[in-house]
Amino acid sequence: MTTEHIQQIFIEYIKADKTQYAILLNGGWGCGKTYFWKNTLVNISEKFGLKPIYISLNGISKIDNLEYKLFSSLLTSTKNNENKLRKKFISISEKPLNILTTNFLKTNMTDLINGLSINIFDFSKYIVCFDDLERCQIDVKEVLGFINNFVEHRYLKTIILANEPEITNSKIEDQSKERNKPEEEDQLKEDKVYYQIKEKVIGRDLKFEFDISTTLPKLFGKYIDPDFTNFLTKQQIAITEILIEYKQDNLRTISFLLDTLERIFPTLKNVQESYVQEIIFFSAIITIEYKNGALTSDDYRNFKNIDNINKMTYSFYLSRKTSESEEEKSNEVKTYPDIFFEKYLINRHYSYSFYPSIYSYVLSGYFDQARLENEIQIRKSEIISKEVQCFRTLHMFRELSEDDFKRLTKDVLQYAKEGKYIIYNYITIADFFYYFAEKELIAESKKEIEKLLFEGLEIAKGRKEIDESTFESLLHFGVKNPDVSVIANKVIEIHDNIKKEQYVANSNKLIDFLNKDEAELRAFFEKHILSKELFPYINGDILLDTILKNSNKQIFYFKELLKDRYNSSNIGEFLYEDIDCLKKLQEGLSKHLENNKEIKPLRKFSYNELISTLKDNIKHLDETRRK
Image (cartoon, rainbow, N blue to C red; front, side, top):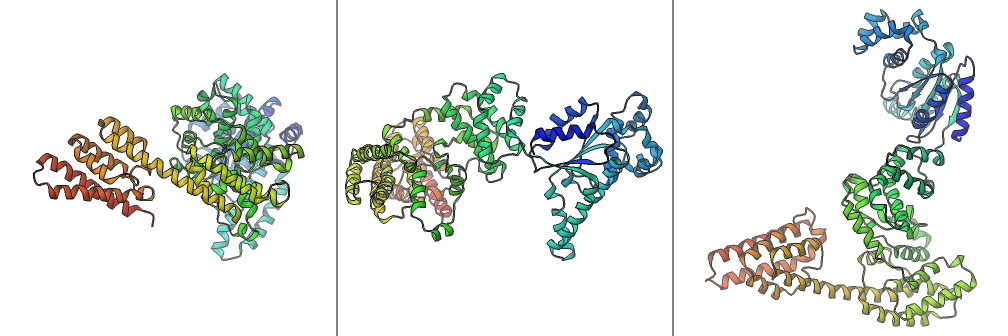
């Protein structure tokens, strides 16, 4: 039911004379029922001369406590002619309930309800909202019976907020365990009793449906900065579409998202609109995952491999889904990136870029503005070439016209032959074009396509462009089509060769930096703190010779940097490949000490400290490697 319809029914209810029923506003947790009461229905109530009173039933375990909350609320809202009773009530309101009932009322609260004292209240001037009915610890029949005393006999306007499916479920489960009875049997019995008393108390059961279009602008109003409010208004359509697409009607989640955008807004003021939309989308889906419990604060430094999802992932995903049998699909064990991709990115894969600063902020509360600015600058430097645009458009070939399809297939094949694509693109190009050939959508045969793609790969590999996240996606999704596997194996071979060349180059840089001052050496280590390329491909003899020629000071700093590199509790999972180089270095230093008896004491001390550190690192890597 829309909020406009609820408002209309609510107005009719409060205008009606001597009503003997309550209204139930029924909706899920966090959907905005309380917000709707406080920000809409309260204003309507006051407009028609009623005094609104709000009582949360959450955690209340005794009727006495509920009676006390109701009467304290009524008394604190009375007018001057009722001040005597009001003041006396307030003066003892901090005393325990049993003292209140014996010393002040000389009876219990139930007697007050049935006695003359209740006549001091003109209930026609009030409307009471009882919230969180499902969270009340009193039996729901007793609560509704208590409310009915006022609704039926005192004509008190009453609205009850609840998530009705949760009212009895938890209690039924506990009762069934205690009595060793089937849960379904207890549920049916309890539901019957509940609906019987509900029918007596509730006159209107209104299903509250979150209306994002009317609620969102109201949420914008809580922010003071007019620039940010204008920003939200401008982005309202984009935010609304995301929330609707992912079925988000929890007010707490939406408010959390808006607060996140408020924090990062200063960084977005002068950012291109396409990146702003991208950041809003990323902030939204990480917020949803966090608020739903799929991500926790413990994950703020663990990206769970969703940082490796990129524009190529969709191509690999399509390729796998096209080739998988129904049995393979049903037996597939999905990783978190699989679930995340299918949940959020099937239709928005080109809107997704991973922003580590925002991810960490949503999960931890710490925002590094400089880091986000740097991430945006990196995104700005990315240029989508014409050939990539053509291939991306061809992904949606079923939606193309005949002329566009013919033009794009011709262009993509020509670009591929010229080596214009990065090497990983050739796998998905093969997958698509082999499919086109099989379905006789193009004139080229599979053999002709394969020859053309191998020609292009030979040119493309010369640019030495590799990307680890794309490569990880390729390995994760795999290639099912045996024809495409020929191309995929060639791409893997090219990737590994280029990677090895780069590792060797970085290893040589380490030797260069060992010959520089400690500040430059530290900066190099910090840059490559978890890089796998530093040690596995290094020339061990040159490394040993360089260290032997270094000063004691530089050896000391090198030793300390090694400690930092391997101090993590699970470092063996990431850098175990370093172990052979470290062993060779330790053995070389030990032999040097054995064969050179004239080494000076301080120099010998420096070597022994480094040897000890190397042994500790080797042991730690071995103990923490993934078995």
